[in-house]
Image 1 (cartoon, helix red, strand yellow):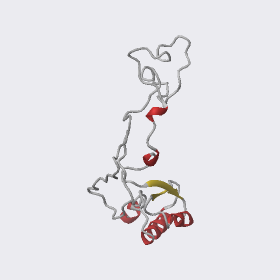
Image 2 (cartoon, helix red, strand yellow):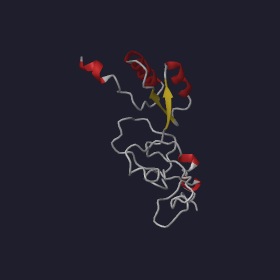
Image 3 (cartoon, one colour):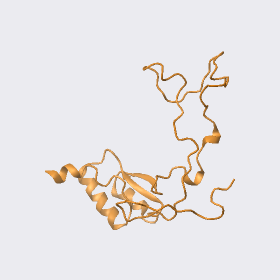
Image 4 (cartoon, one colour):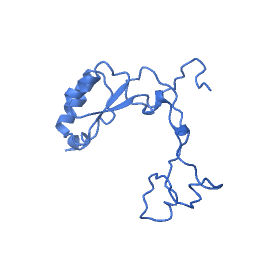
Length: 151
């Protein structure tokens, strides 16, 4: 089954603040919109809803009885070309300093940088300025800068 029938489809970007666009923007197809939750995790608060494979000897869920939720299977996997794409068409790349930002110099049409959570406001400002010079998109450019400007 071919999704694109020989052509690349592009979606219009509406209301985007950044002028930077990815080189290509294939349509992202999700085979399943909701998450796989652990069986009967909704019954107890102490039970983590993260997926766990059922191992019970007589469990109806393990035996795929009618009326039980779907199991995790390889067929639900995403398309390789769109696997880690963000909705804007870029792939996220976490940056801790300006030296790591320089790696994206030749790849600014595929990757967008995200500044790591533990970077200070002063270094953040320098990273954002350098990214602007290199025309690299920063996903969290205004984080921690808002409180600085307010003072």
